[in-house]
Length: 127
Image (cartoon, rainbow, N blue to C red; front, top):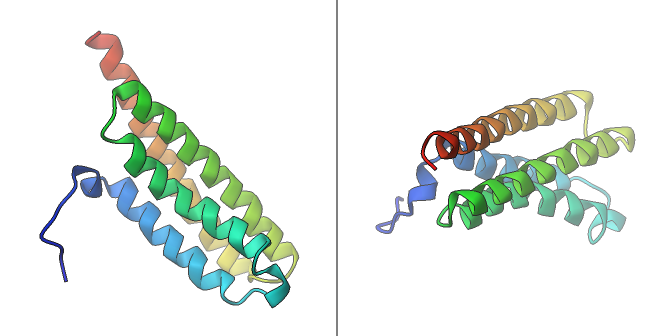
């Protein structure tokens, strides 16, 4: 069911993909051992969710604020690479799951970098 209330940042495809990635990670960490519940599982989920949260938080601000939040989102995406690799090394996720995570993170990072570069370029031509 679609909400009657719409926010402009929800139109960003990168935001939608980041929301989806957060759900992928949430499903994966449900399979992690119980001793990881408040440690590694939580860290991975928070890093994955932080990507979309930073895009939403930075969107309504100035271009400089949005670029800052895009950078935070990219840092969170990079953290997810490390988390996924660590999960594979600990045998919590399969090689295929790790590869899919890396593919999704790569797509997100490229999209965020492109968006950031467009904002920076726009500001150079329209100071």
